[in-house]
Length: 109
Image 1: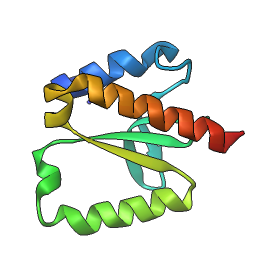
Image 2: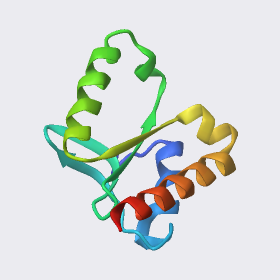
Image 3: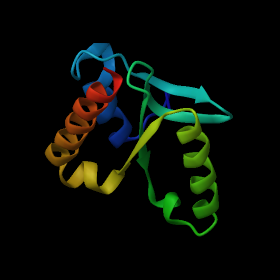
């Protein structure tokens, strides 16, 4: 992803990089528990995952369930964003991320 990000990944990274989104530091392609998170904020224990069409595949259901269970065990909340939604309605996605960050800030206090 770092060398050839999709359009959706590039858009989200422009929002999140350099503490531009609420002053929180996000990292790209961050490894945790055998999984690679698209975007991760250690301070908030928040992962933002972009889902392309392959996430709709039948074999992904068990994988995603196990992945979410493992990340939850680490205290990490995962926000999944379909690429199509980001492209179609970026403003709603941005508002959703802001709301989750605000809620996570209240949990971290």
